[in-house]
Image (cartoon, rainbow, N blue to C red; front, top):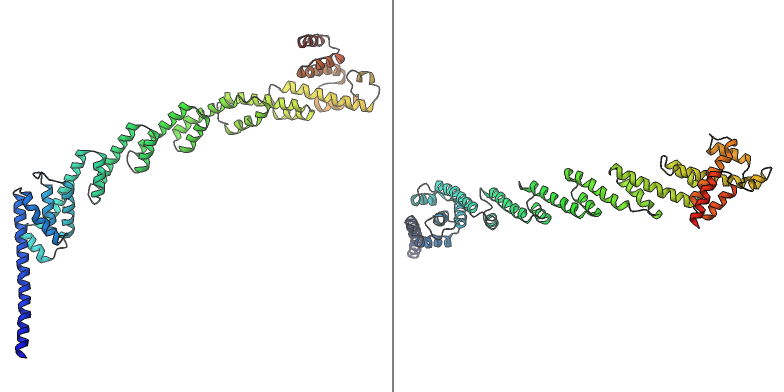
Length: 412
């Protein structure tokens, strides 16, 4: 039994020793491979060095020493297969893992590459800077995109983003369209060129709207770019003038509401344009009052539009209509004025009331002169054969009668 135990013990002990021996030779062989790889690399025999480093990565892709060796290999300008992106990737992997190496492994790495950790940090900065310099030299959007995708952990990442935005902005400037600048602004809102892009876009939009000179396009601009105070201040007078050119042609009675809309919504338009619209509105308001042909309609117009050029005629019409009302009242009451009522009937009592309400400056002794004048205005407004004939029935004014007779001849 003792013999068996001793045999087993010997076997185990021998196995451990064998494993340790194999490990030693394996690590020793690996160390030799590293030495050969770096020797080939220093001699610029890159094709001979590469397999050794690649084999090491097959065993451990995070091997700091192998990644460092490949980084130097792809960085070396003497290497026809140099690739700064691969060099960057390998040196970053090496740096991430160099500080994590166990003390024994670090010590062996130091024997192959003296000052290993310091060298890794040094070349990390050198390769990063060289790759950035390379991207600057290529100076294309596609190269910047590749860098952003492959090297987000580069010290120069933000600088390359700035380079890309400047190149993209140049493309937008060359295209010189609202859509091109909009795309740039949407993709690079934090770029230093963004404000210039916004200004260029807004200016292009302004010039296009100005060229089209369409009312709704002006409003679209104001809705889209309300914060561009400078251009808004330029666009408003143009929009208002465009609106005026549209609304000044509304001359039919049914267009009265449109003129009111202009007055309410474009108060800051050119004062001369507003004056034209107000006069046009006054004219239509007067036509509407005439179409209603009542004392109240005329009085409403007079009250709401003081100073309008139609006011004298409106007053004359109102007074004439009031005379008709007075005459009707007199006809209903009868009395000593029947002879006058046969020509232009009215009652003195009613006429006194009329004077108090409309013509305080007149006295009854002037009523025939006033009557003739108002009747003449009424006939002239009607401008019809019957209207003039009605006037001649009641008029005692010779001069007015001559004018009316001429008008009748014109109408025949």
